[in-house]
Length: 101
Image 1 (tube, rainbow, N blue to C red):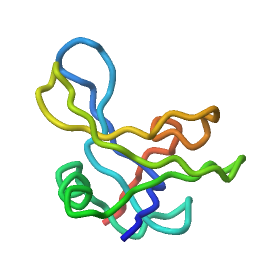
Image 2: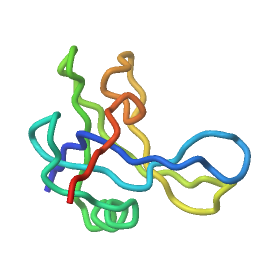
Image 3: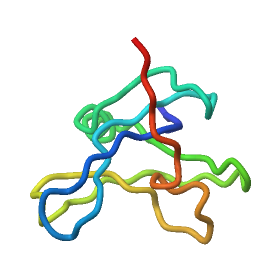
Image 4: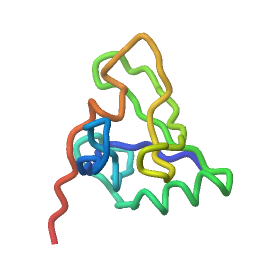
């Protein structure tokens, strides 16, 4: 199954380099409202089972596939968008998720 990521939750990395890692994402078809929240662990499990995740730029409409990678500083897998020539489809460019109970 393919999932569109529309927002992210990030936390600062504890070790160098000083940057943030995605800890959860929101998926859905509406970029302004996520249908479901998935933790990083859930995303990686789904990817390992053959599911795919992507982002779509609001201005360009271009899709970037999401890939998992190993962070040697954190010693665990994380996710990132595949590199391309546009920035509006990067995971880091997506809005932050704001979940309401």
